[in-house]
Length: 380
Image (tube, rainbow, N blue to C red; front, top):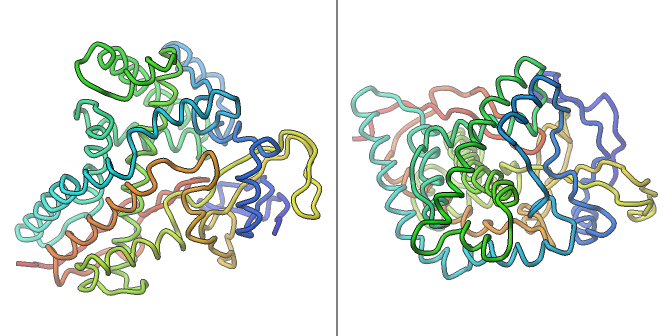
């Protein structure tokens, strides 16, 4: 159930150590998530690699601040803020977005088919997986759809800065990117407060949040709310074309087949395979004593960080998006987007095959996916 920390657990070409107490058993993972008073989310968004002085100075110059608001909030304010944000992710709202999601997915798949027709090869991450989730997230939150390429770059850079193992030079590069994102976000908050109609930041301001608090919430929501969906779609496409899933490419062109494949990837190698907690005080998990301050890594699905030898286990599907009071609010939306995108892509691109069976991968503490899914063929 518990795997003690040690230097033997490595990932990312040997660069990353896992100095955490790893919890793999699904029942134990669920117990930790349902005991927030004992296992605080306060470390959920703390940089895995402590930021060095040059990177910190870059962030400080733009007033970069991430007070705990949602995912890392262990105070009494969490429930009220979560209720405000949840109002944008109700089952009815998500269901109403399906036609728009399908429209975007069909358009993206058509563009990929056009590129295949003209050149004989295409990257499905860039053409199919990358941008529709960002458009959906911004529209859902009532925010303007713009600067999508920048948003995707900022998202990946921030993930690496906070969940990766960059050296000092790379940290500095990533910090400049994060600072640019934060400046953009602060302007977006200001603009949104003056905009007509309903949007996330107006709702948060009405609830009493300050600008730094809104920026903190928006910073990670605008990353997690779309980039993790892109990564889920990317992994699902790769495993489908590799032939390692429970359904084949042709079957994935059906609603049942696409949903089956997405569910399979979620439970075996989701885009968010781990999440962190910290012991708020001396406590126990089962028969194991947990000292105050112990850093805990929860295994939500299979991944090479907690199981570099490939002998780990996958948690139950119900844990993939977390559990308890901090469960991912966008779970149903992400699964819907992934299934619709897979279905439309498989339908539009019959007969394609992988061009690269060993792509470069995003491999961070809590995020994983192939960076590219390059395919070849002439579907039309």
